[in-house]
Length: 96
Picture 1 (cartoon, rainbow, N blue to C red):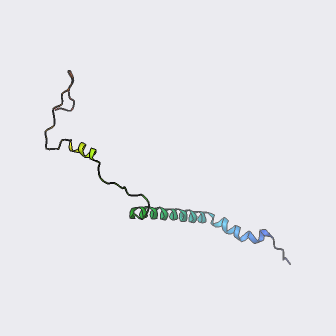
Picture 2: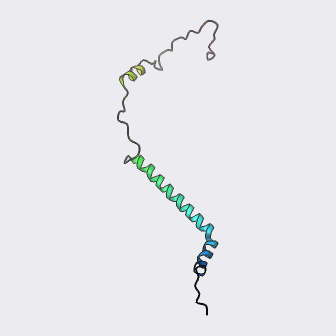
């Protein structure tokens, strides 16, 4: 009569299971890990877009007065441009 229990006989069914399904288990764990990371990234992006965290808003949304004066000094599209004078012997490659 064999009443001899050894460690090898206890883990033999478990070893046979892992030997048979090791590829399937690997794929399941990889897909689960990737799914978890995608869910975390999606939650982080959506919470930043909702304004309840993430990127802080700017405090001042107006131009300073110096920038406004520079913008006002530009010519508008309905004004005629000033004539450009080129140095002697030079031609404008962009003229028709």
